Length: 133
Ligand SMILES: [Zn+2]
Ligand SMILES: [Zn+2]
Image (cartoon, rainbow, N blue to C red; front, side, top):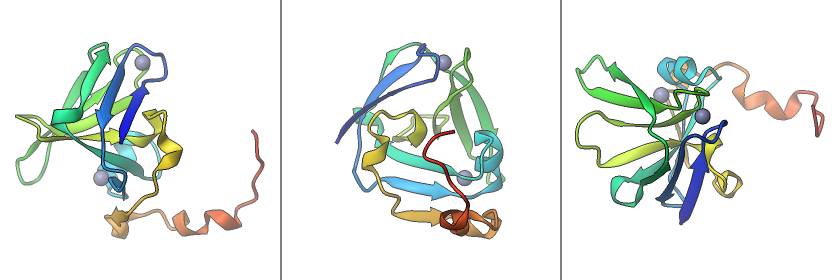
């Protein structure tokens, strides 16, 4: 499926060809901190179908315990996270679902790092809710 997305300020825009079952949730502490949120929802996009349409993201290289280098790309103007990928010769991009125009069309197919999930993530339906702010 073809998707497109952009950062909050609009300086960065991209398009990609993705698998409709490519959405995964990550509850690891790196994703919590790097996203500034409770967990991160990542949509896998093969490198061959990913294209930047506008702008050049800044990036932060995270070095894993294994020594693997991962590039976290974000808009240098508004700070929106755009993708993560291997720092060298990426074969795929991990796109951030909130940046994608068609985001409501995807349902997560798995969750990883549940051991660091915040304790309330399965209780959202019980939280008092309004349709708007
Ligand atoms: Zn931006
Ligand atoms: Zn993670």
